[in-house]
Image (cartoon, rainbow, N blue to C red; front, side, top):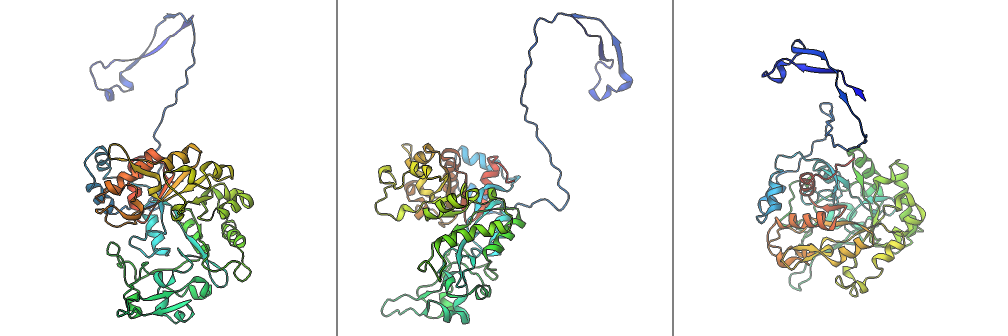
Length: 446
């Protein structure tokens, strides 16, 4: 038996709770017998919101811009649109679900400092440097070893003379398009650093260099192309660290025969990882990726702390023997990838979805097979197709029949996130993905 003796009795019956101050409280003692027949210990988990105070001026300002709001407004009516409209006032925050594909190249020159900073300001928790090498075997950020003629001003400089193919004007009479081919392997790192990035484009009808350097797609813009600061791979690492972002470098396939002046493919794969080690980057913050499975397997075998998060980019859409809807044609199979140590696969968006019986977007057999094998999935790329009124092109080819407005990319994004369960999505305009991730309460980037 226990005696419970002390009670607080508020004497201000009928008063408000705030009126029950110390002057109105009387402490009395009573005795009451309580029979205890059994005791049970119950442990409950209670989610308690935590407010973290950030000193003035030190908080990250996430600005998704006007585009996500435009896309939400353009969506078909329904529960998803209603849910996304409720998030119009934010808050918006950085999340690893939002991956800056080459930065923010919908409006900024790709793989430039300006593009990366824009992506970070829109909440991209992971940023991508596509890695290739120069004539002196230094690593730089470019989408392709041989794209300098469309992504930089090289043709308007004296370095054009070093290009594999200098500018050749179009010949309208014979129907021959303008030509040029300039590679990072044509020039040294010092020469590369003198160039300026521009929007990735060219005009095949050009008869002079100035015309050829134009050609920007009408859904993009040259508004922010007046300054495009090129970066080495090592410089990108330091920039991403300063922005508090994780990193997903892609080892690009060389456009020159390997070995290149004694520089082997294995040297190339190792050098990329070595630059993260030299910069003291936590391997958990790096998602090294390649379309070449042998690169990923090299990292798994030789740098396992980085290889554990190695990403196999699936580009088998270019393989005529590969049937997206027929798993027996997939070589390697999902299980074979897992058996080799691969943990993350990254296909284009259209691999992961198809049209369902109700004329809606549903996960594809590819997505189901990857999940059944235990693979994590990352996908690419949103905001790369321009207006979607006519079906969306490459990234929407398995759902083109039901794609007819720009808001449909948010419907695709929702299926990829909620039904396929992707870890993250590359986007040419990360603000769109950040808006969705923040609205759906996805984990913030830490």
